[in-house]
Image 1 (cartoon, helix red, strand yellow):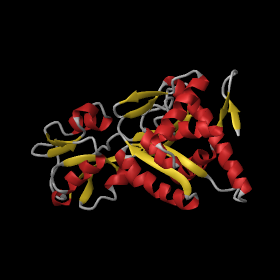
Image 2 (image 1 turned 120 degrees about the horizontal axis):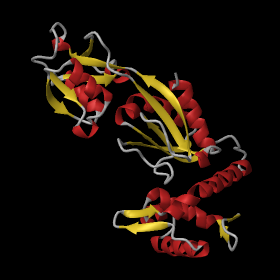
Image 3 (image 1 turned 120 degrees about the vertical axis):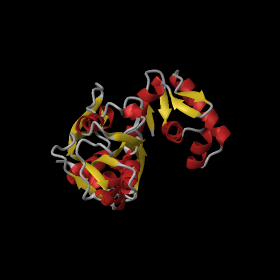
Image 4 (image 1 turned 90 degrees about the vertical axis):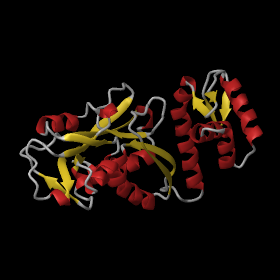
Length: 293
């Protein structure tokens, strides 16, 4: 199978397969193990591929291979070629309905643990040959550079090459250890708080805590909502948590102080070049079915 990626040269599918393996594994050694080849062979084939295209596809760094802008530009085309190759293989084997291949997702820690994981487990049972990788990261990963295929985050997507939609509205609440069940909260005098770290000091719930409990003392900070929930349960302080997390954490109770913390919208997005990628479409459909409101 050949794919013409430039006016001057035809590129063999095996070269594209090597390119994809290196892009996903990040090292020649990892890509070689994945494809059952030797590392020197992978290096030679990559150099030949780059020469054929007249482009440098990877930046060589001490930590591994990172896609250049040129490499990122052809990644989606290479993956569509992979999709066609896999479809041909399935058709020849009489398994035309089976999806396979990798998908990389990004979300916050608590969202991945408590909301995405059950959906991903069911998706894996339905499509066992799709390898899903979930990266829980507070950073906004770059869709254009394909740091992730499908991204879940609390800020809208403004990238011109992103396709996105609002997935769900998540309500937040104030929680306390059960030991504080009958204690008066008031203006927070004598109370301790578990809140976001200073890098996330602009979060709406941080401002809400300062306004509602001005006399409370900050006891601990963390950018991890699960950590905040565990600290709250152990009596370290009051914490504002997403309700899907707070309502399922043992040892804490919801506290009503007359006003609820601000809720947040969650958005999901992907690069427009992936809109016809069957495995991404199947996963996104299941996520929307289970989580959208």
